Length: 233
Image (cartoon, rainbow, N blue to C red):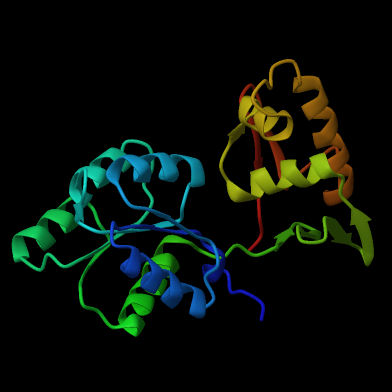
């Protein structure tokens, strides 16, 4: 069965009880989540979180080398990933402490599997919007899933670089994306010296998407700064 957008998200579990890790993993997996990672200590969780870049954290409060609260403080230094505390600590002070740190939810053990799933989906749905693979521009549409532009009844393919460039601009709809940021998206961590190549890609894209490439209305130059893409609603 094809996964939904939310079920493709990576969930990280942090708990030192192997049976509980196994049970929560099974609850998620049975419902369609396959991208699940785990850690049993604060130290391991920080390292795994940095390496795996999960989309949601489910944390225990009591851990062998610290607690979930201190772990969340460390994690917040490098990511704003949503967090659910899943713990046996049911005191009001603990719940307020967790939510006060910015946790998205606090679930007390024991819990119903369906309750956990409902809360997981609610947070993922709130934090992650499914992006459409098709955008509308003035006079054409761009289908990112097929790397194609459709204009005047014709289908025009996009090259790999053109696809990355347009997708980067589309993610920042209506906002200026700097020359350096676009060069980095296209050529990696050492983007310097590629500005002429970037301009050449922009010209070719305009020939594909603009009604009048010399007078662009979709892919706009912001002189001295970069480019922005105007998307029709």
